[in-house]
Amino acid sequence: MSLSFPPFTRWVKRLIIICAAVYFLQVVLGAIAPQLARNVEIYFGLVPFFVLHYGFVWQLVTYSFLHASVSHLLLNMLTLWMFGSQEEQDWGTRKFLEFYFFCVAGAALVTVAVSYTGLPGASPVIPTIGASGGIYGLLIAFGMLYGDREVFLFPFPFSIKAKYLVAIIIFVVVIATFQPSQGGVANFAHLGGLLFGFLYIKFIPGRGLMFGWGANQDFSDSSLLARHIARKCDTTQKTPGNQCHVCGKVFSTAKCVQLHMGRWH
Image 1 (cartoon, rainbow, N blue to C red):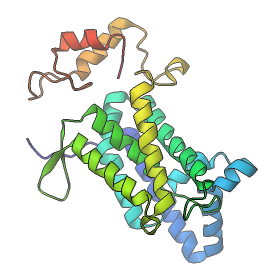
Image 2 (image 1 turned 60 degrees about the vertical axis):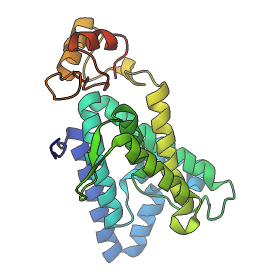
Image 3 (image 1 turned 90 degrees about the horizontal axis):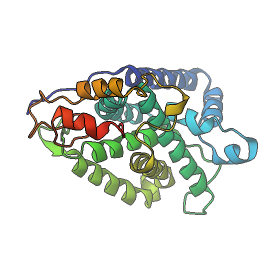
Image 4 (image 1 turned 45 degrees about the vertical axis):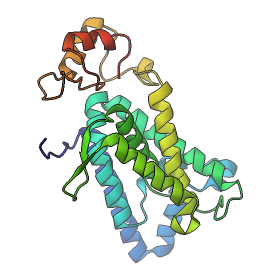
């Protein structure tokens, strides 16, 4: 097994650039116009009170482009690159973006709901910012779809199977969620991302929610779908029993084409 880094796929790269540029603007505004910077955070961050009572529905998405610190930004963007690139490669741009923002919006809805529960530290007027909802959705998807793949814990010189890494992360997030001193209610956005990521992978049709609205690649032609899967099912990789690059199952390319004909991942 060799150490290799994933490529910067098209929309992973764009999301990273957008988040970095937005954070740069946050820092600049914070230095020259602190009140304006605060207003931007309130207007574009996730404030449950404004979403429910003033119709600020854009906040269900825009909060994911704002970050609280350099470390917050770097950790989220590193995870987006390390795990999101593989998923964008295998799913294609349309499904990747659909999944990512499905988790972002789902995490926001969970945060809005929790803010009105009266839990310690919960308040509908406290802004929530960060891409963590979408990031945690990508993490659980990776664990479910590529569970047996070895993941290097950069910068540590050892690896762990993806399913175990995701299990550890879920455990840590659950513990942190009920400790207000560790971020408390803000961590419900993480749990929301995990929940909606799980629901999407488990119950949404393999072609995605918007397949009928027009996709980047039309798989209505079965021969085109077969050729695409044959290209994705990389049997030249040194995996036990020719492991399918798309679904992780061990099949020959021809068998995998038949398997995926009615269910595209």
